[in-house]
Length: 517
Image (cartoon, rainbow, N blue to C red; front, side, top):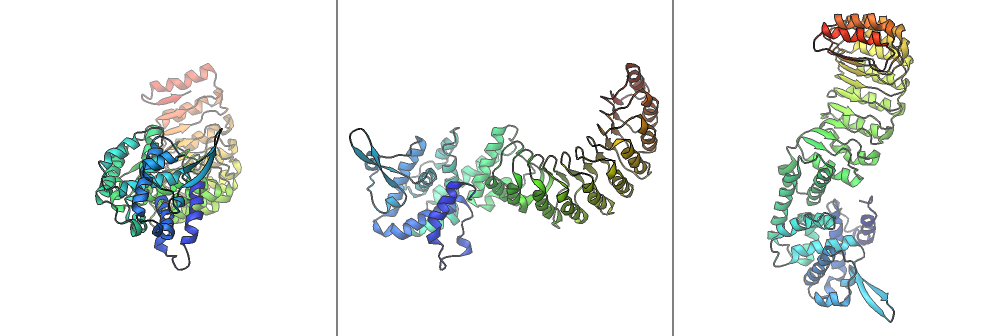
């Protein structure tokens, strides 16, 4: 909660006196923002509620005034406002409203304000449950939700949160029971909103709206409602939407109530390690987990490794590209891969792993129980020094079908070492990416010889290297003899026009083959 300064301030102001040694009980520790503010008002009621005849009546009137303020974006109230809502200044009222002196040209006057806008929003929400004539609560909530400037966003979260018995219980001790009609109306409204938002995440607005409904579910702490609305949900996409640590905690709560999340896409969400820590308890339930471009760092990988070690882990594909990873995280990751039995795809591309980081994953790949089929290592500062380890791993691993080593500095010598593994008749590589790895005509014969024996190769990328027309005959031979090949990428090499024509002409003998030059 303390990622938001206002919540932190409320926590210190209101709960410090409340959590004495006598009262401290685990079940009273607030789990949600609504519960936190409930204890704030509870503390005022406990200490000052006996000073007035009807605290419920005062909070109802103050709440109606607060709601008007939220509606009109008004945070300062005058004597006329108090008179309008039949409120009298008192020690009880001063518990959640402050008196301020306002000076104009001729005199001073007293004005009133809530200590923080969130307190005003909470009191406004509380009044919805205290009024004897709630009217159509669903209509009121829908109208508030329709305001696109977000003025009612926190108010709505508080209303939903107060439908929870955990939030209502401490207040009902002094204010009496909340209206059952209102509680049921709020729950029905939340159910309608969640069901209406699921699957509508093509736009940023759709993603933000769905996240807001998840905040409602979190504040409600209504597990039955959550399971009915999101329990069978299989895909969640928030890519490109900035998520705070609180958002991540809410998302973790929702995922935890789902049966299985087949696809969770959190690319470019700026979650960093702090957000990942909040997500951690639920990540093992996701089958496809995309976390690229989040600046997770090595400490983030340590958290993910815990999820991979979970005996109930369902993660099959894990994307960690562009996350500022170094070789410091590889020991934890390799250890997790050794014990994990679900992972089939791992993308570590565009990090700074270096050669030393390849050795440990290679050990995991040698494990006969390793099920990894896709491995992405492009853009990781790899050189020919790591090729021997990779070649050894490829020779032992019989499950790998997709390998991306592009944008590294393997050179001819590195690819020659890899060729030894590619010659293995049991090698299952279907897609091999070697774009921009520093290849020249010197390695063509070795590479082509190795790939010519491979029975499974369907896609080969050799673009942005330094092949010339000298390599054309060998490449033509590969294309014509390797019948399984469906695509070969050779663009941005150094072929002359005649060499390009010779390569393109093989299409006549191989209908359907894609030759990209």
